[in-house]
Length: 131
Image (cartoon, rainbow, N blue to C red; front, top):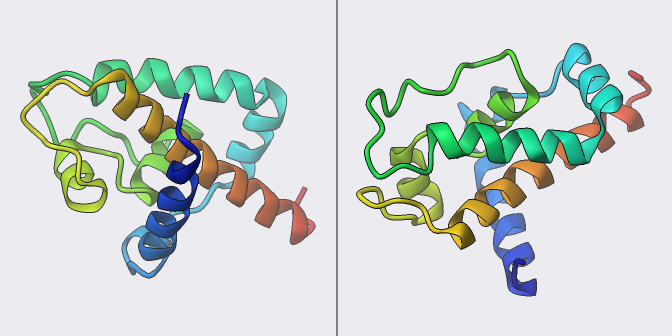
């Protein structure tokens, strides 16, 4: 369970990330939106936990910095947009130490960042009448 002030922290981080030219290039595509709508947000959140357990949680990640594809799943797109794609980005943008296994609290935080971004993207997609 995340503390209430994490919502404020997440909103502030997402605001800063939106000013990054690189991070601002990432958006959900039509196929991503359809996939999310078909699977549901709870399933996408479950996928986020499963993907991060393998690719971000371990103390040592063999191919850190290259473990997250640019596309193929909405969570991958969200990871790049939110700087949760590798341990270096987590350290730089979210102040999560690199040389340790992520705690459950840190994992929950990262998933919440990803899901918050995805929800914002879905709202933007829907308000632009793309779906």
